Length: 88
Image (cartoon, rainbow, N blue to C red; front, side, top):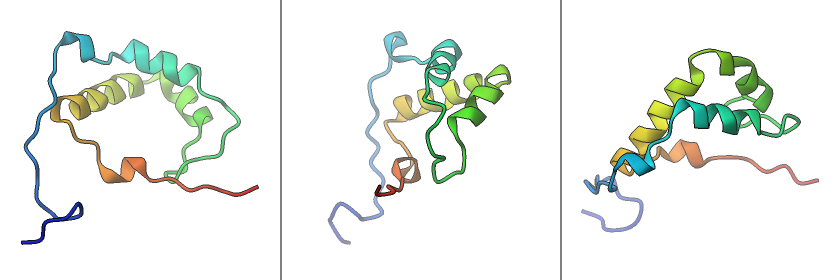
């Protein structure tokens, strides 16, 4: 059983959660509306324009629920931190 930062063991550490840490759909909508529109797409191919366009849908509610789960369980999927940098 290897002990390093990249082993496959799961840690059952939960972050403290109370009502002061909850994210609601209105906050998600506000953050999306303040995003810079002329930025390049991420690895998923989505740009800020995509998110702004679908803000009128259920996306803010879904993202708020997802982010609250991240907070509750103290875990964010590794791929959420991946990006690429284009040198100028």
